[in-house]
Structure formats: structure tokens, C-alpha cells
Image (tube, rainbow over all chains, first blue to last red; front, top):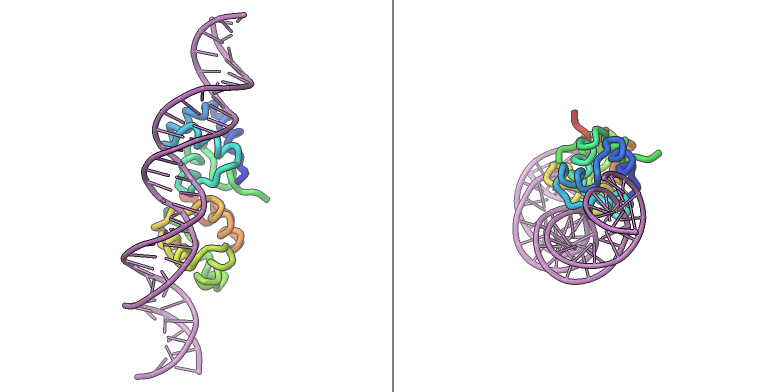
Length: 63
Length: 63
DNA sequence: AAATAATGTAATATATATAATACATTAAGT
DNA sequence: ACTTAATGTATTATATATATTACATTATTT
């Protein structure tokens, strides 16, 4: 489950913990999602996208 | 978890069962997702989008 | 109208996303 | 170098996505 969350988060200068708090998950969850080792739910993907001012496609779509 | 799967599926003239088979879930799962009562995983959202020749944003993004 | 296909829906079971806690490591600030 | 912030990672627990089975209802076809 590759994605571009890490870069988008860096653009906003958020720490994993800050983003986690914004989307109501733990820092660990953000960390694992960024590593691509997680298969997050749509609701969480939508929250993350909005928190980072991106769309789903910008973060999760490929090709 | 509102979405536009049902319309996109109709455009392709797929039954719920046909779509389910393409993305390796049960018909019930597709039905519940279409009704918006489900919070599917990203992997499944990606599979559905590809099966229907849409992007994530086209199916799941709002505003 | 009868038969069949498609969809709705409910109950229980299983797989897995996420939480909670904890400790280790790396990066940044002083 | 030392201190602290940020991130990596592992373990166990919990919540929930999905499967399975089954039956009901609605739409379609003949």
C-alpha cells in the first residue's frame, strides 16, 4: 500500500504525532502507513488527505 | 462513507456479483459498500476503482 | 404470472486495522 | 557531548472489515 503521505506531511511540517492527533489515530499507525506496511481504511485515508490538503489520488493513486 | 460505485458499476453493466468476483470480495461486501454503510480498506478501494476504470477521487472524493 | 436473476439483509465467524504500552534508535537543539 | 524531540519497532489487546451461510425481496425475462 504505497503512498505519498510522508512527503505531503513534510510539506506541511507536521510531525507524525501532530498528524496522528489531527486524524485521531496513534503515531504508530501513521508511521506504519507511511512505511506502506498498512492497508488503512477509506475513512482514515480521507482524513489524512484533508489534513494534508491533498486529494486521495494525490496521496494514494498510481499510474 | 458515501461513494459513487453504484453508478460507475451500472455504466459498466456489472452486477454486484461480477464486480465482487473481479475484486475478490463477496457480493455482500459490495452491496454494503455501495449503501455507504461500510468503511472499506484502501486496497479494496483501489481494486474497485481499477475494475471500474475510475480513480479514487472519482469514486470517493467529495467537494 | 411464473421463473430466474439481482439485490437486500441478518447472524455468526474470522481476519486484520488500530490502540495501548513500552523501549530502542536516530535527528535536532542547546 | 548532552538533552530532548522525532521516529522505528515489537507485543498484546480491541475494534471492525470481511467471509460465510441463509433467506427475503425486488427486478427481469420468458
